[in-house]
Image 1 (cartoon, helix red, strand yellow):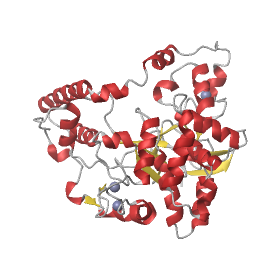
Image 2 (cartoon, rainbow, N blue to C red):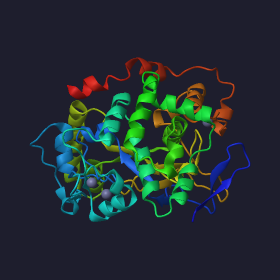
Image 3 (cartoon, rainbow, N blue to C red):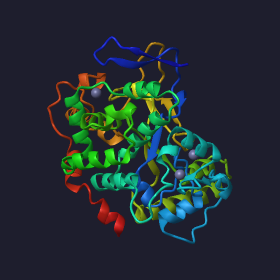
Image 4 (tube, helix red, strand yellow):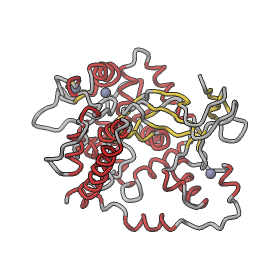
Length: 392
Ligand SMILES: [Zn+2]
Ligand SMILES: [Zn+2]
Ligand SMILES: [Zn+2]
């Protein structure tokens, strides 16, 4: 192992530390999540991914056609597509698709046995579908989370041969007060929808088997602690057949003339995608990782999560050379927010994670005036035009 989790000597509590020298660009570790889940709007709009691991189920060409809206589009070098259509299997009872028998087996044994909609009454709507609908109505794209991740987390406990151990694993993610959890749960829903929290809780309780061993999570406080858990620990996952094809095709070492043609084709394709689909290129979802979630935030991170396998398996990559005993930190903020003023970054971290960042960068900018970055103001005024965009 390149890393260990230990209690740090600063106020941050637990942290992730290098046990040996790690070179810039290398993989620090890889791990599969405890649970993951595709975002519901993403799935609804045709982003076709494995129901377990989010691996794309479309070929690169199907993906390119859908995203550009050009049905006649032919991708050159089809051999660079990594989607294996012949391995795709479906649940015979509810019809969800998996990239392989392996994923189907893992899903069934971990959570799907309880969550399969096989006994759906055709005249009505299954409580799990009802819950997903409720969630969709309080959380529009750009999506950052889904209540269905919590559903899988609890089903995983109920299906575990050792539920106590599974509960302990889940509780390792939670270490906050009831008030902080409540604040984070409201923040996750946003000011427009926080009034829907009790409705969401009601749908949630209806959809989950009321079993003794998970009763602590079904109360309002318990539910809020789970929302806080996914809000603070949920790691976004993105996969894409077209970007895999792109990487393979551009790394083939083509002769210059051919390479030039390919570059032109790709530029045109991304232009067409931009016109037809905009920014939503990937299959997107969220996952919980035991080890990665122990990494603290820093505004100048030395590591970054990536998805090299084009599924939910996370690879943590070193962004710089890391010395033995150095803390490994990631950024909890997206790239754009990370470039903003100290005040904006710290405000975002306080609201979404309840901590005051005192990293090296924040310390060095301690005398900066408390200004909100202009981009943030712009964003506020132009947000949530998604529904109109997508229906055009
Ligand atoms: Zn899969
Ligand atoms: Zn099923
Ligand atoms: Zn900072």
